[in-house]
Length: 395
Figure 1 (cartoon, helix red, strand yellow):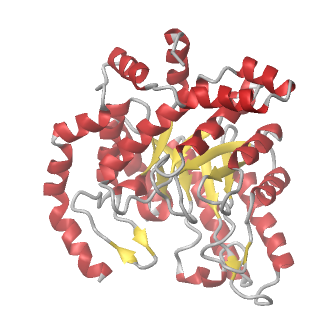
Figure 2 (tube, one colour; figure 1 turned 90 degrees about the vertical axis):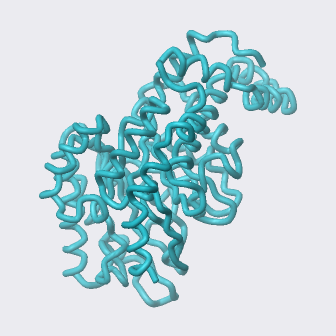
């Protein structure tokens, strides 16, 4: 397929903005340990600096997602510092992510803990997170609830449903006009018998119960093997409950690999479902966010690579001839319909992207430009000693 309408494609590219995560620049690992990188960000300012560099190379990442416990350990009192960093680096605070999984008190759950004092502590953290979002001008408060249990009979599943509803209702009621609460689900890990918020159906019901400012967030790694994620996306669009994505890729479970590294066709199919939505209002507010753990790849290279890959797959999905596809589907021409979809996926959109970047004064090849800029070598030199000191902590 040839790209015939550059004007149309420019419009498509202008619409795509991707929020990148602060934790994607920091040292991360698995439950078995961390492998430290010399250039990993060790402070929130370094995260803003790295995000600004990615945006200068790609032009589509103006927001940085923040994790309250990691980026604002002082809570609301740290927002002034964040505001100054946002102004200094021309990067806006994105979604605010509460932490309901790290404190020792949360061993048996946070907002679903059988201890009412611990539930109150967790709810207070959620309410403060909404205030942080308000202070920083952030639209979305993004909740991942890792609560659950490991053994049958260990916890009352039904009681925990009620506690979950109470906490989400309290959080929703604190939202200001224009703000949203995004509910992220996950079938297992760290809980292995039952997870309190385990799938998109539970998330959708809880969002509807909480109120009109609650939506569902789809993490592409938070599904069972072989689940049809684009069908989930289609349903959430139909219900007007799709709030956003955490994009990553996986081979087995929640692997948090770079987007498209294992199955780029899946991400393409997800974007296709979004482009197929006839009501523009249903898809206009979708937040495209990255949630990845760059344990092996260099932090900066992985982030630039994943942003540009997302851009390519988004553009490929925009090329689908949906009018022709609908006609073929109505005639039940299975092979022809599939080939219509595949034709767009196999189109090389990189020349069009290079042309668009040049028109914006951006480097044609962001990854190559990063390597040639010397930025990675500079931050490795500046941060090497601080990261080496962390090895004592993680030993």
